[in-house]
Every structure is written in C-alpha cells, then in structure tokens.
Amino acid sequence: MTDAEDRKPRSDEARSGYRQPGGVAAPADGESSTTSEFALPQGLAVPRSGASESETTSEFALPEGLDVPHPGAEPEGSAFSTPAAYSPQHAPSAVTPPAGTPAVNLAKDVPWQDRMRTMLRMPVTERPAPEAPQRHDDDTGPAVPRVLDLTLRIGELLLAGGEGAEDVEAAMFAVCRSYGLDRCEPTVTFTLLSVSHQPSLVEDPVTASRTVRRRGTDYTRLAAVFRLVDDLSDPDTHISLEEAYRRLAEIRRNRHPYPTWVLTSASGLLAGAASLLVGGDAIVFVAALLGAMLGDRLAWLCAGRGLPEFYQFAVAAMPPAAIGIALTLTHVEVKASAVITGGLFALLPGRALVAGVQDGLTGFYITASARLLEVLYFFVSIVAGVLVVLYFGVQLGAKLNPDAALGTGDQPVVQIIASMLLSLAFAVLLQQERSTVLAVTLNGGVAWCVYGAMHYAGGISPVASTAAAAGLVGLFGQLMSRYRFASALPYTTAAIGPLLPGSATYFGLLAIAQSEVDRGLVSLTKAVALAMAIAIGVNLGSEISRLFLKVPGSASAEGRRAAKRTRGF
Image 1: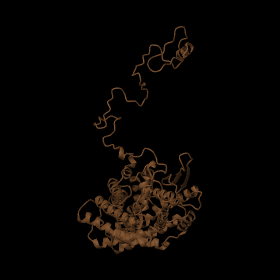
Image 2: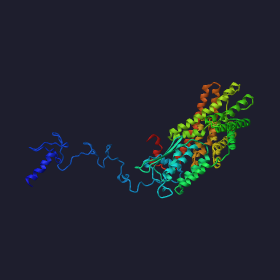
Image 3: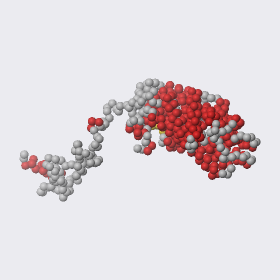
Image 4: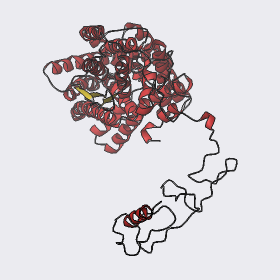
C-alpha cells in the first residue's frame, strides 16, 4: 500500500470524527478539527469492552446489575423473567395463521338467545368467526344496508313488545351474523335502535338507526319474531333477505288474537279475581268486574281522542274506586276496600317494572332508567285517579278503614283458584298465544301457593315470600323458553299478577286521603319494596337457571369475563 493510500483513510477518519469502537478519534496534526454534529464531544469517555464485542445501545437491553435466573432456577418476580407456569410447548401462537382464526363451535343445542348473549359479552377481538356461510342472493356479498334495515325492524318489534334490552341486542346480533356481517355492534336504548357494521379495519363503517315511537303489548307477535330469528340463526335453514322481509311483513299485518270485547272482559275478570284474592265475596267480585270493565272502556275512549297514557291510567282507575265508595255510602255490608284493590290490580304496570329492573341488572342503565321512569309516571297517574275519588268519598262521609285486613289466608282453595283466574285474564290482556295460556295459568297458581305457604303458614315477611315466589316464576319461565326456543316473557309476566302489591298501594292512598301522610308513605314504601322483590326475583330465577343449564362459553375464560363485563374486569 502506498503512502497516499495509507493517508487517505486516516484523513477521512479525522474529518468525520468516527472510529470503530475502541476510542474517540482525535484530529491529526495539521488537519482541521472535528465539525460533524454526530461526533462525540471531547472529554467524553466511552467505556471500552472487549476488542471483538460491540457496545450495547438498545433500549430493550437488561439494566446493569439485574440478575436473570437460569431456565431451571426459580424466578425472583422480575417483570423480565419467565413465569414458572410457562411452557413453550403449550404457548399460544404468536401470529395469526394465513387461513385466519379457526371458528369457535358454539353449541347448537341451546337457544340462540344464549349463544348470541355469550357473543355480545365477549370483547370484539375475541368473538369467533361466523359458523354459517354468508347467505345472499348472488356472489357479490350480502347487501349490507338491507341487512341492517331488516335487523333494525326486527329489533323495533321486540323492543316495542316489551322485550329486555339485552335480548333485543342478541336478536339483532343474530340477524347480522346469519347474513355474514360479523363485525357489527347493535345498540339499544329506550326509544332508539342503532347498528354499525365495519367491513374491515381499513373501510368506513356503515351505521343505521331507527326510532321506536309506538309501543304495544302483543306477545303473539313477539313469539312470531322470535321464531323468525330462530330460523335465521339456524345454519341448516337458508332464508333469503326477500323471504325474511316477507315473513316480517306478515307478522306486522297479523291481527291481534283476541277481539276488543274479549280484552274488556279479561280486564273485568282480572279485577274480580283480584278482589277474591284479597278476601272479597260474590258481590265484591261483580262490583270489581263492572268497575274494571267501565274503566277499560273509558281508557279506550281517551286513547281514541289522542290523550297520553298518563291520563288514560288516571281515568281507568276512577270507576272501581267510585263503585267502592258508592257501596260504602249505601251501607252495603261488603268489603269496599277489596273492590278498589281489585281495580288497582288491573292497572299496575308489572310488565314494565320487570323489564326495567332486568335491564338495570344486566347493565343497560339508560334503558332501565327510562323504563322505571315510565313505571313511575303510570303509578303517579293511578295514584292521582284514585286519590281524587277517595278524597270526594271521604268528604261525603264514606267510612273507609285503612287498617282493614285483606287476604288473611283463611280460604286457601278460593285464593288459589282466584290466582289462576287472575293469571289467565292477564295472559289474555297481554295477547299471548293460546298454547301458552295454560302454562302461565298454572305458573301463577304455583306462585301463589308458594307465597301463601311462606307468608300465611310460615309467618315469613311478605317481601321475602314475594321474592321467593317470583324467583320460582322466573325459573319456570326460563326453562319453558329454553324448551320451546322462545321468549320467557309469556311464561313469567302474567304469572306474577297475583303477587302485585295492590292492597298495599290502596291502603297507602287511603291513608293519604284521610290526612295520615306518615302511615300512607309507609304503606306505599311497602308496595315499592314488594314490586322490587317481584322484579328482582324474576330476574334471579332466570339467572339461576343458567347456572345449572348448559350455556356456551360458561366453562371458558370468555364465560367468566362475560359475568363481569359491566365492571370492566
């Protein structure tokens, strides 16, 4: 090598200020000083390592002084050490396979409600892929806007029929997945439904919404919608979008199973059975029946004139109270309090109360608050209607005793028959299918037997007895719904009719009308406690059934997280 060739790398090294690890390059004599901004300043000592080793500069390097245990040694609890239970042979794959994540096989022998509820409670990133192939008319893929529209229309019918928010979301999710839209998120509130679908992580989401403006109680229509969702969720049943729309239109056009005169008669029968339940006789039965039928006709008249439901309930509560006051003023030896209590049974919003508490217990707090506020408005309207009549009755000299004893349990056979008649009439008012009326009638009779045995024979408090009886109703309803792959509402709502706090509500209103506000508030508080015991008992009975019956994901980590989803654990 010549002298020029030997000097060239040295001069380049001096000008750049760099040298291979082993020290800092100093400028040569007679040459310019270091001017590069990447050069190390003078006086900075760089530690030297072995001549053949490079310096450690990575931020992922272990700090100096940290002892890493050997593979066979016990770890010291460091964040950098491998857990003792870790096994490389059983470690999950660090990458997604080219064919995608394998589909998780959810059990097919359980209702779609349980399968979709399990899916909804999973994190989005852990939901399994759709088990069934995408169903569409051609090979271009599902018509996303039409699928979302069908989903919203089905959810609207379920929410307007009184179904719980979680079950409505499960049904909407089932419809979307049946047509291959697995990246969808349904959202349900009291008056608004929305669903969002994102085709992929790099595409814009498609969102649609629908407002629920009208509500009606028709459990026959509710059962038909459940059958449609069940057929859509069945991988062996291929239903096109056109067929699904046709069936949905038929469900909307179907007339109610019972005519108007049958509903009015059922309202009267409910009030009469409730009056027998609290100790009335034949005269009381007829008086309560006539009062409830008159109140029902007045409420229909107000509805035809466009008055809100608040005033409809207030008007419907007046005739039974007026007939009770009239019997007292005419000195007829009957229990006028039983007449008024029977009329209240036909108006108490037990269905909305159970749905509201169920939504709150399942984490849908906005919907639960709206439902409970609706119950409060209905209750206030009933209070207003009855209080007006009671106030004028007291002013006219009616002698009503707020300490009268109703439903002493001395006629158990009559009360059991009355409870079954009450459940039967309630089922007709809810427009249930005829095939479910017998089951819910027997369920109501069993619920009253449990309540009577615990409260009258066992001396247990009425709140605890009501909660136990309602829990049995919820358990039976959940079992029947799983057996028939249908909603649990037709088997539970009418069966809780005999447990509604009609007498406690009446005595509270009577005490307030007689200026005994403290006693009235105590009685009304007892009525609220009984109502909450009914709602919580029904929900608890349903949840207890899921503890012992096969539910997809219950034995896995996903199932355990599902139970804690509202707390973020």
